[in-house]
Image (cartoon, rainbow, N blue to C red):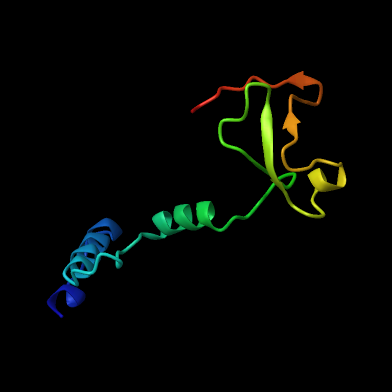
Length: 101
């Protein structure tokens, strides 16, 4: 209980103490995440789709941005976009795609 009763000078010091306590459990599946780390993790793992309701393949294709998924009833869906479509321009401007393989 000594670590719990201590006054910490800032959040980072408190987070470090929590990480030390959690690591003492020797459980490879348990770890402490700061609120910022948790927000970052949940924003990338929830599958939320924002904007026009498109999920794109990472890296695109040699021709443009390839659609992976379209949110039903989203703006992209209402305008006829479908999975596997390739977007080559937006508002009349050609898309420059950098392929990362």
